[in-house]
Length: 160
Length: 211
Image 1 (tube, chains in turn yellow, green):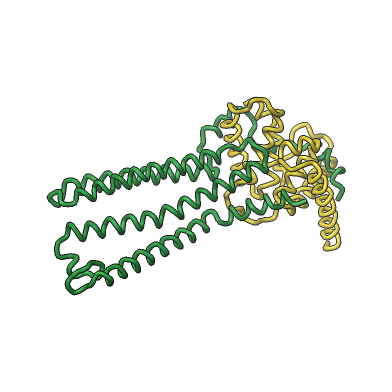
Image 2 (cartoon, rainbow over the protein chains, first blue to last red):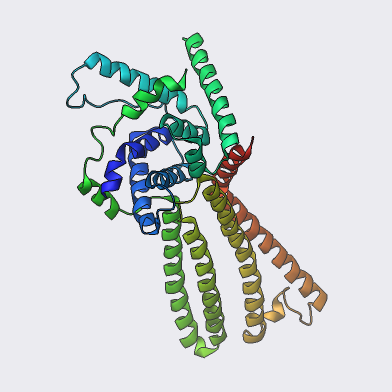
């Protein structure tokens, strides 16, 4: 329970990556927590706890059968968290985060997972351990994703 | 967009203010039923099992005690089909249990999901037509042996007015039409239920394997 609580931000990031609506994110969060709870007795420590957790979270998110409604993604802060003094800085960060999510959600399911692990500073070794894709392939994919994101951002800039 | 520029802001983000805050809320989540696809399929399968057990038990008792016990063989037949259903149920349940393991690497998990879902679908596709053929054969036999006079006026049975070859053709046509109809109805239903999902998973797997 404490471990789930400790890794809560990571779980929410997965939910944000794969769900567009708030209720979908809550459903997926609950589903991941249930899967973690069920799978925990089988955790033998062969891999790092975070690796094991990423696997379960991504497997649950990617293999979800539910049909998702297509709406524009919105990751809006409901209110300013306590302890935020620098409002401008906070808003700038939120804007950046929104920009990042709107670009990432245009990627495929696997590309999103790769980007997430990259942003989390996971090594290619660990990414391979989570995704099951060999490191060479991961590097190739990562370069393609970066290109794709650059093109997507340019397209948005020219469009606006 | 340069991804590296976003690493800090990505790492700093926390769970939303309105989201789960503590152990109590996580515990409350764990008390709820899983809404995951496999959990739902398992619940549906259990529901199907309950319906089969209740309806078959009622029918078995009914045919055993009514009609002056003339149709006791129907009861035995239903009992046999019911026993086969239990086997069918455990096969499907085992497949679903295999799909519940989510702690493997993403690629191998997806491969396992696709293989298992395809086996699950195949089981449905085979079981439907087989059940139709078995039922046709059994109820044909019942009407022929237990209902005097019925076979006399029916194209499906050999009689003074209906030669054997006509009856054989009639049975063949009926069996082929019903089997094909049930098979394609199942194909349509299963495609509607799982087709898109299997295609999606295969697409993801293909993308993962591409260099």
